[in-house]
Length: 517
Image (cartoon, rainbow, N blue to C red; front, side, top):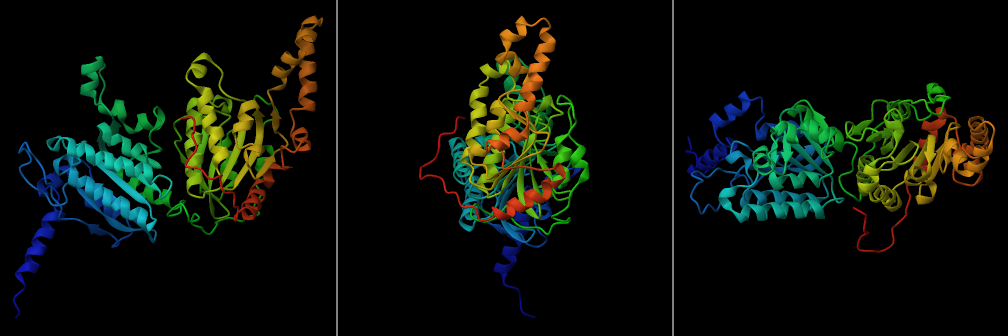
């Protein structure tokens, strides 16, 4: 029997050591905490048997203080490539069992290499984040490593999809990386992000708070708006990543993937014809409208718990990916405030980056009035949304279901911002402002001189409403392309998307615009 080559045996030994991460005991401890190992996360995320690791034998190269007693293969991060639903992706998975997953110079080099490879090959890049921050034993080298990652996050934005899956802590400057990516998924009670931790905040400001209340999944999904989705487990986070990417192309020059529709293109939902209340001040649920128009069970809402008066998400209509933007009239009457404007702006730009058509559902009485909003810069934030829609060159379809007043009408994908097709329902009200407000301004003296001011105001408001606050006046001036029955919305939108599939609308040559951030 031929004796095995000792060099092969040594390779097997080293490889087995690399697969252990921080060691068996630390892995057992993590499992006892209900955590998956870094490798288990990779295997669950990718199609079975498709992962190929890169640079597994790298170790840390600098520690002037002599505090890092042992060198670990991989240096706290697993990098490589594999497939999700048959499409290639590049990724990294931080290993908390090796120095708390802290970022070192060599770990940064590994991450930057797979980021570069993802862009060179035009495929998505996924970050599985679980790290205590920078490896302070390496001093400024670890900080330089973060800067290299951030620069790539920014430069590759809009080139390939970037997804951040928060599976543990992400503290200090490290939090800027996920904030630069297209999607941030957090795990409830398990992941958190903040720039300065509870101890530092207590020392500087005297405020007392725990990590979960400071930067947990609930906070970033409902208060700060930093994250897009919150899920109950690591497994759910990895599955959600796969689901999200199914709507996106692999890069900015491809079209989104097509999925065979589960329902008919010509399907009409009769319930839509009675979904808008006759009373203009009575709310309804826009989510119900959206669900009845898109392909069944295809709507993936993003940031559902932040700025709930606005709706954003991905869906399929006729099997094709679309971006959904709209207002929720059952929340704050669908008014647009600072957070809602920011929420819709970023999503519109992401869809435009990746050739995803936009379908906008409009029912908003305007921008939220108030001193706090004005002083907070509602003009600047509203201008972001105006800029995003004006800049977008993807197919744009607008459906006005009810109120489209003033600035809210203009910024919400109005026809003259370059929207390709604008539909209105018979319930649409398109005007500078509501009939009552218009009557108060236009006929102030006449109302005050009347024997019964209230009755005169109502009479004049009714006249204004009949003349201007209806879709027929807007259609007569060319602001609406067609007035349709609500039940016709799905087939009309599908037909429009089909007609616009080869749309070509290049922007003027420039380095980049100057969005009012």
